[in-house]
Length: 155
Image (tube, rainbow, N blue to C red; front, side):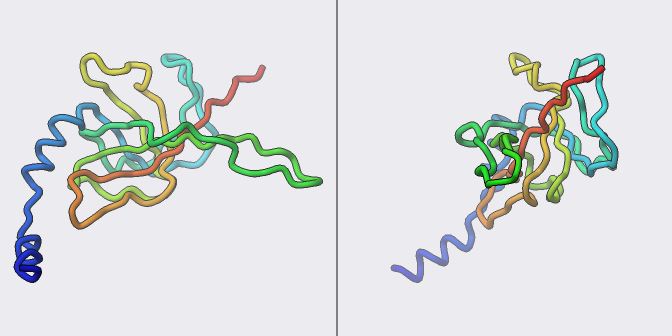
């Protein structure tokens, strides 16, 4: 019985599950682009600073969601060093398995949201923390993200 069970698992086809998940979850359009040099640029249309994008490596169906709890402080105070209060925003991007693997520091932008979705996400950007994950039984590609913090305009 044990050996036969593993033989059945070898033929497991999740393509129909992947299609179902894509149709139910990947409702928005996301863009993955290589990071370009230079400081963030103010976008008067959205009122936000955006990181300059390099080459677009993927634009298509996807979703950006909070992954777990909201971030915290990334370091502890050390005598004679400044306090670091930069937070880590724990998010994840979901894309089809056919999407390319995002490398660390890839810029992820929400381009459009589905009807009834949160339109405040349009134009927001995140930075990939690590290469996209994969698995032998995956149905979507997952990329861990950290939101690019807004910079106040100084005059």
